[in-house]
Amino acid sequence: MRRHQGLVRGLLRRLCAGDAALADDLAQETFLLAWRKLPDFRFESRLSTWLYRIALNAWKSDRRRPKELSIEDEAAIPADDAAPLPDVVARVDLERAFAALSDGERAALAACYGADLSHDEAAKALGLPLGTVKTHVARAKAKLRARLADPRSKEKP
Image (cartoon, rainbow, N blue to C red; front, side, top):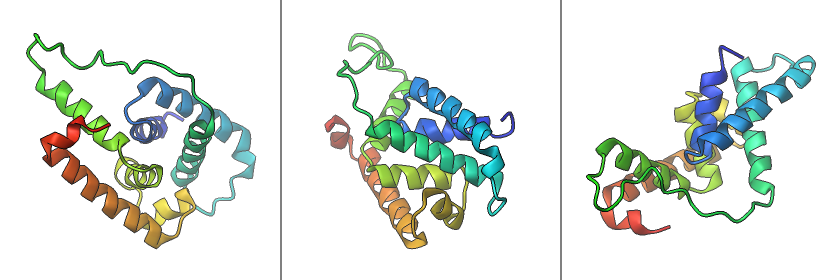
């Protein structure tokens, strides 16, 4: 757990579009599930790939659960009369751009860049064909590039 917790939490934070509390909850759930399923590990892939698959499944399960209505937390964005902090604004912009991706694009990008898996390893972890993962990554990168380059796109939900 100590060896992989940072990467699993980072992957889940990207998948959860910056919701650190949810990502931490899902990381905890991931390691609990991994502990219970450890006898089922067949050594057909790396342990990290197996953990990422469990984490992705935990995230997908959470996405399917009905959510309570809540007001979006905008505490990280400076008030209009305050001088904006460049790092905070850039992080919020990136999180919003990442949240605008489809689930498949977000998962593929997080697996390949956040978890540092090869496209082949990401395909195995995500349970998708290799070509689909490559397409998701290419589309996600294009969408992020366009969204972060165009200031008007930041206003869209």
